[in-house]
Image (cartoon, rainbow, N blue to C red; front, side, top):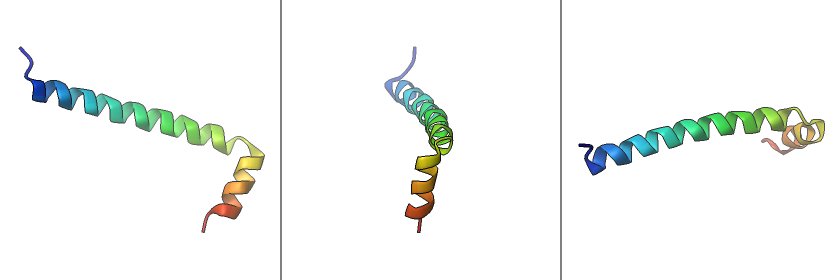
Length: 45
């Protein structure tokens, strides 16, 4: 039997992995667009 704490931890850890993966793909997709790359270059301090 899984305790609620274990279940909650399991959910949050897999969630963070998903966020990391989608975040990386998001950035890669972003970087591949010249206009956005140009914007980010000018925008970053």
